[in-house]
Image (cartoon, rainbow, N blue to C red; front, top):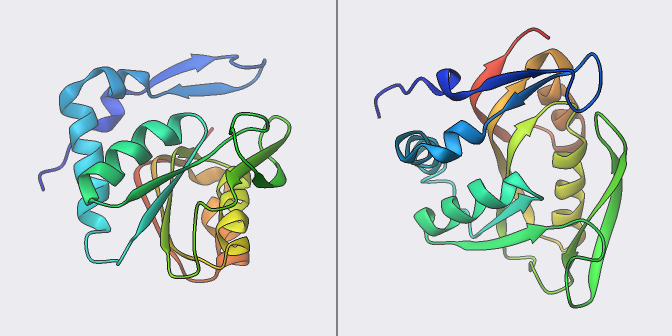
Length: 180
């Protein structure tokens, strides 16, 4: 696949959601059929031979990339949602991200021990959401085979944080930001 310049679609928003933060807005990628297609195609190609059976997408933008990627790869999609958003019995875990303490939940019948799971989100920084999704997957006895992100803020060292929990697992990011 030819290189695609995703960075030209990412807009820096200064002091959002709080002073001192430079938020990386990826919504222009979603608005561009070419950029969105290139992102999903690259992720699908990277994990094509991984044996993925389910994709877990983290609320909220992980839903966008995860659901489209699941369709592209012909596998199931499982949403990892904030509390109170799923209609049936759930299991959840608490975690800390860049801004607050949060919780993600999944339906108790979302995964089985035979599932091989790819965790998908738009961005990884401190790894809080990704690690919480991994803990959910493992609670159900399923295997985490990898992570896919549009954007990685490497100055937070998320790969080291994930490796400390999941060992040598495949982490794939389309854009890496090395400085704040």
